[in-house]
Length: 263
Ligand code: G3P
Ligand code: CA
Image 1 (cartoon, rainbow, N blue to C red):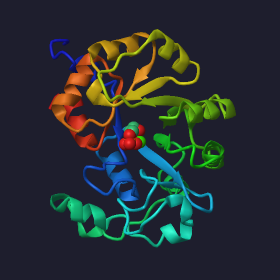
Image 2: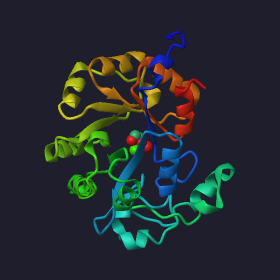
Image 3: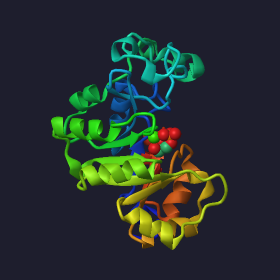
């Protein structure tokens, strides 16, 4: 029956485990990514940074300070140095109610390790972070995608940088792309922006707090996917679903799964 309202199309919403199930475990660790899968996330979201020796690693910040016991810029450290670091204890200290002894000492994963762990048919949603800091990042990512034979049907590459996405598109037009947006005031989507984005991307990812129903419907009616970030409360998830979003980034894929099941 359609009387349950939004539930009639709930099944089509893409559940993106943002930095893994990062509400439950230290972001961008293999543990958090595994929990994302277990909690019914459809995609593992991975932010990329590049080490001094050119290795792609999963980390949100350009600096080591927040999510490891190291300090300084990623680009000034080799992979071997970064592999010495503890990428889990900070979480136990910051979120004592979610802390687990096994999080202490978790390592920063390389993109190689993520692909080796989850395989070619997992759904990866990979962000080129600070591409202006890391020349060659797009080619390096594409090399890994090809090296591991990652299934491009379910791969998404995202960035705030249109330049980075256009570079990816030029290198390999078969990689599906999502343009991230960051708004600091109530957002509107112009026809010109839609036309420009559709030249290379199949979707957009705006911050959820500045968009409204009109914004969402305009994106959807233009044929774009729309995946707002980062949505952690069930009421906001349901509101966005009712507006017609096609996916949601969340630190709590378990909560989104409950909303999608009408719980
Ligand atoms: O990639 C979507 C969302 O993650 C963008 O924000 O800062 O969490 O990478 P950020
Ligand atoms: Ca991201």
